[in-house]
Image 1 (tube, rainbow, N blue to C red):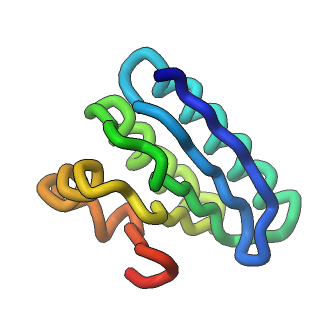
Image 2 (cartoon, helix red, strand yellow; image 1 turned 90 degrees about the vertical axis):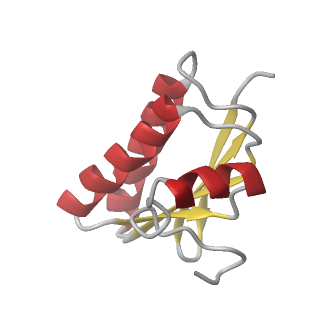
Amino acid sequence: MGLSIREDKAASGVLVSVEGEVDVSNAPELREAIDEALKHAAEYGATLVEVALDQVPYIDSTGIGVLVGVVHRASEVGVQVRVLNPQRNVARVLALLGLDGELGVTYDGRA
């Protein structure tokens, strides 16, 4: 399954919707897309970038590293990053790694 990434301007800031498995083969594509969203958030004057993972059934360590790196880069420019609605398997891995708090994992608007 290929990776599909879409960016939309949302009332809360910028929404990045991801669909497909995230692994070493396409993690750079995810990094570029979220970095672009950070740039656009700054242009819009937004302080939030949300990354929707509800259509991501699998993410490997490279993909998780992309998310952590983005959170760190975003904080340097005053933008918050939140991961929205990860599927059960992805959420479990993030929680086991203790990253759900750092990534601002939120379900339907609730942390």
